[in-house]
Image 1: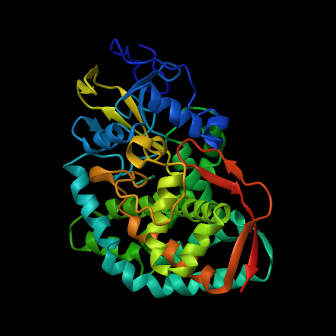
Image 2 (image 1 turned 180 degrees about the vertical axis):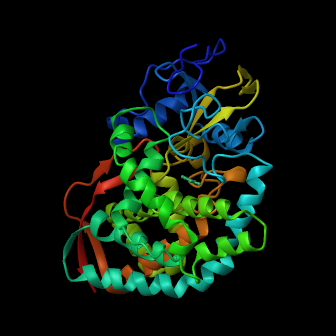
Amino acid sequence: MTLIEGHEPIIPAAGIPVWDIDPYDESVLRDPQAYYAELRRLGDVVYIPRYSVLAVGRHKITQKIFGDHENFVSSRGVGLNDFKLGKPWREPSIILEVDPPEHTKTRKVMARALSPKVMKALASLFNEIAEQVVDGIVQKGTIDAVTELAEIFPTTVFPKVLGMKDVNARFLVDYGAMVFNGVGPDNALRRNSMSKASEIVPWITNACARDRLTEDGLGALIYADADNGEISHAEAAMLVRSFLSAGVDTTVTGIGNALWCLSQNPAEWEKLKADPKLFRPAFEEVLRFTSPVHTFARTAGRDTEIAGFPVQEGTKVLCVLGAANSDPEKWGDPEVFRIDRKPVGHVAFGAGIHGCVGQNLARAELEAILSAMLAKIDRIEPAGDPVWRPNNAIHALDKLPLKLIQK
Ligand code: OVV
């Protein structure tokens, strides 16, 4: 049988709505709301012949599939390629692209390195760097908030937190784009990102080695667990690679999207100024409203069902997190950005056993950068049209011209 995007084509069960759409068309990726709405309208589950996959976008069913790791596995890849049928572009991640019981051990090690206690100890470093970054832009008046702020903060703070000796912000951002475009189809986005692989992948691999890490970072915490026998040293290097894969592009996107939300909704910025306790809910609302990771897939590990329809083993299921996070059935008025919504149950960090293990670090970064901005900046205003940067799994800005009005 000829594969489609590296997986077995399926014959969808009778009654599943069929939709002739390319969810990875660049215009859809730039402005996905109409796609999200139609996906939800069509049903609990939809067949997309273009890639011979199923897709879910209603909140309830998306959360259910993410919660059901026994039927919907990650070990066959969280993109369109089925790792059981072909060699993936890189060694599979030993935390993302595995199932229990293998997943349980690596998840524990990562969760410990990223615990609230560790994050608390890092808060002063986050604040110090955030202040420096904001000091560097506050005088400028008008900035591109993507290249001058959103990309700068994580690429400065994250290597320090990890204890990286090798610094190359461009490689970190490009590797993230590669990993996230990599879960999509073999389109121009994926091919363009991958064209840098021969230069970047060896650099990333080297940067994860123990001798390229300091003794005092999160990388050292992971290697300490190898010393005490909980994992092997090779596994430690792979988990450090997971930090680099999942930690940079995502937080760059979270910061950029937060500034987009707040600059487009000045009343919400004012609310935040008046009540800094709203930081946390404000960031959750940014995540719900913009879904920085818009889509991840699962694979049916055995014959199963979705919403009563039979689903054959090997079926790829696109879980459209952006659609779930804008489902009116769940949120009432999803199109409104309200920093005090407290959107409990959003799936921007995923859900279930693979739910983002670094989410506390992401929140800590956002809190630091927003506090530093609120301390020195009275208002932020759009200074031109935002431009979105299409990516097969990430909904991020390419340009965000902002005017900063100093206090
Ligand atoms: C959540 C996530 C995204 C991308 C890569 C990885 C994890 C990884 O473990 O490599």
